[in-house]
Structure formats: C-alpha cells, structure tokens
Length: 314
Length: 305
Image (cartoon, rainbow over all chains, first blue to last red; front, side, top):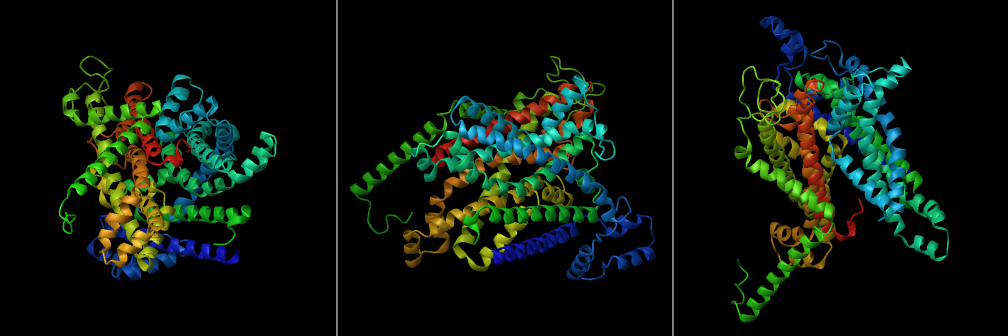
C-alpha cells in the first residue's frame, strides 16, 4: 500500500517535470522577442543588450530551462508582458475564481449525475432510461458555449431574469454573486451531469451483471435492498476515478463560460495571454493547470485504493 | 501478393477465396443491420450525411461569396436575397455557414484520422517493442493526460498560428495519446496469442507482424473511438475559434461566427442562434452515428454508456 502510494507520488512528480520541459521548450519557440516584449520596442541597442543579459538569453537553452525551473519552484514565473507585474500576482487573482466555479459546479453535478445514473441503470430499458439517456447523450454533445449563448438569450434577453455578465465572489456580496453565478454554474454543471450520468449508468450495469447480484436475487432478497447493498456499493466505486479527469475538463471548460459571461478567471487569462503572446503567463497557466489536474488524479487514486480493498496492491 | 508463391492457384484455392469473400459480404451486411437497428442511429446517420453533402457541394449551395463584403448591408434580417440575413460586415450569413460546414468537417475528420493513424502505430510499437520505447511513450501519454486538450491546443496555436492546416495538426497532436493508450492495451492482449509468437519465431519482420496479425485483431476498438472522437474534435475546433484563438478570420468557422454574433444577441438573435443550432445538430448526429458504429462493432458495449 505505502509502496503504491510512494510510486504514484513519484510518477506525479515525474509528470510535472515533463510538463515543465514541454511548456518551457514549446513556449521558447514562439515568435516573439522577450526583450522587446518586456521593455517595449522603443529601447536602444545598449538597453537591449542589458535586457538580453538580464533574461539570460545569452546562455544555452538547457541552462535557461534550469534557471526558469528553479525560479518556478520558488513561485517566481517572471514578469507578465502585458500587465508588467509578476505573473504570480496576475494569476493568483484569477485562479481562485476558476477553482470556485469548477469545484462549486462539481459539487452540484456529481450528486445529480450519480442519482440520474442510478435511475437509468435500475430502470434499464424502461422509458425513464430511454428519455434520460437520450437527454444525457444530447447534452454531452452540445458545446458548453452553445448552451451558454442559448441560455443567455433565453434568460437574460428574452425573460430578463438575470444580469448579463460580471462576477462577484459569494463572500463579497452573496445575493449578487448568486444572481450572476446561476447561469455560468448551470452551464458548467449540465455537461458534468450528463457525463457523470453516463458513466454511473455503465458502471452500475457492470455491477448488476455480477454473480453476487444473481445470488442475492435467487436468495429472494428484495430488489431495493440488492440495489442499495450490492449494486451501489460496487458500482459507485469507479465513479471516484472520474473526479480527477472531470476537474481538468471543468477547468478547461470554464474558459468558454468565463468568456461568455465575462468572468475574470484563468480561462479568460489564458485566452488573453495567447492573443498577446504573453509567454510567462502562458507557461505559468499550463503548469498550474497540469498541477491541479495531476494532484486531483493522485488524490482520486488514493481514494480509490482506500475505498476498494480489492485493488490495494499493484 | 506472395500468396501464390508456394502453391499455384488451384480449384480449392479459388473456392476458398470465394467463400472468404462471401463471408466478408455477410459481415458487412450484418454490420449495417445491427448498426441501424436502433432508429436513433438512422437519425444520426441522416444528419451526418446532410452536413457531409452540404460540405461537398458548398459552392453550389451557397448563394454568395462567403467572404464578399456588401457595403452598407450589414446586420440585415433574413430575406429572399440573404436567407439567414447578413453578418456584422455585410457578408451573407447563409453562405458563410454553408462554407463553415467544410471547415468543421474537414478539420474534424482529417485530424481524427491523422491522430488515429499515428496513435495506432505508436501504440502497436509500444506494445511490441516494450522496454524503453514503451516507457517513454507511456510517460508522454501521462503527461498529456495532465494538461487539458484545450489548454495545450491554445499554447500550440500561440506558437504555430491558426491556419486551417496548423489547426488540423494541433488538434491531431492532442488526440494521438488517447488512441495510443487504447491501441497499446489492445495490442498487448493480442500479443499473448500463439500466432503472434509463431510469426515472431518464423522470422517475419516486425512491420509485417504488426500489420498482418496485431492490427486486424485489435482494430475495432480503434474504429469505435475514432468515430466517437470526430465530434469531440469538431467541438474543440469550434470552441477554439469561438474563443478567438482558432482558425483565423476571414475563414468562416462556426465557432468564430458565434463569437462575432453574440454581441448582437439582443438585436439579431438569429445571427448567433443559427450557427449554434448547426453545431449542436452536427455534433449530436456524429455522436449518435458513433454510438451505432460502436454497437455494431463491439456487442459487449451495446447501449451501455
């Protein structure tokens, strides 16, 4: 058990090192002169030379990677080209917003998705299953920004129920935050609900097919008891592993929602940094996203081992 | 090609080949029968076919040049001359949407195809060679799993620009790893069969073993996942274009049309809602068709996910 956990931890660290390689080299080949980007294009030759030295551009790329990685480990991702402030400061303002949206919508979508998944699996082949599965398939197919634009049209423009855009954190102004947050959260959660419902259904159906369920049935146990005691206990365990992947999807997917509703989060920041070729911000965003996703995978794997004794060792 | 080297073609041989052809025909017929046994798959196939036809015959269907700007005729309502109205620059929206079908389908299909080919090959290599090759490829896969595809695609676009070709390659890059992982798992299970060992012992070259023994026996999950990821790839492309970091304007992409149009949601709601509907219908159709293909190829998964 401990060995597995240590192994998994080492793997995560290795992944992060690889991601840092990738982000550094990928971003280094971008068509933008870092000196001009940072100090403006009006500087003369002498100032350029100084800036060139200061950014270590005279050193070979490998050495530059290690300098960058060392600084990044200490939380210093350089200075944003666009905002001219440290990247860490630029990002720390935004990542809270995105994490708040992602985690909140996960808290909404997980229980609803699991509940609907259980219903479809238990009522397999009946009309409840047909309708819910079709709805889930359709919802999972529609891009979230399409859902967002359509919902905005219906609720903001036609019915005039909700404010257009903007974002407030709940501890600043609760009422306003909820009003502004309803549509973004609904959009983010819908996709999550559909995905979770589908996964829960297939995992539950897998459990229903097992021998112990047949044994329980032939013993004459009540169907509700079997579902609760045998099917759900086994069928819901694999759902834990979904958390890691869906957190990544939510963080990436919130880019669309933030864009539509004008929410100042990581997604919007990343889009801006791509449009402005703001290399330090891009590097930091990719690293941070990868870190959050990897940690989520790590935690879910630990949870999985803790919950299911059958896979304690690998 | 070298089948007849050992024995010249005899009657028995001809009969055998005819039988095999007969079997293949029956398999194909059964494939289509199972696939279309659910009505909803027929709907998906019809929707997909519709958009494919629109994409192929775009020049015939479009009523105007999609990039031609009619001065002073911007944001017109739908009329006989402009079926869906005009956009913010005075271009015909109907023609832009018709041509946008091409962009969506072409990037979706091409990059999925490329990603599947490369992923399949690398996956087989990883399974067959094992050792360092396997380890390196698997680590890359794990790394790519940690970065959401949207994020990596955006970074790549910043580096390589947003032409349609680079878009195909960027989306392909994001899609390789899934099919690599899947092919590796499937190839590993095929490799434990005796006929692979026999082929190895008889000194067949690696590429031939991969192509003749491993690929045919693990191809159906690959086809299933490829058919299901076309929709996802189109979603990615339109999403990136929607965020303004996708295919560069003035090329008409549904995502970028929606992006332009949402400012006018109050005055010209159809401008945004029509491409939204097209995108939704296309991706839903593709996914329904993909489900049908899955049902036909992989009976164990029938209707369960």
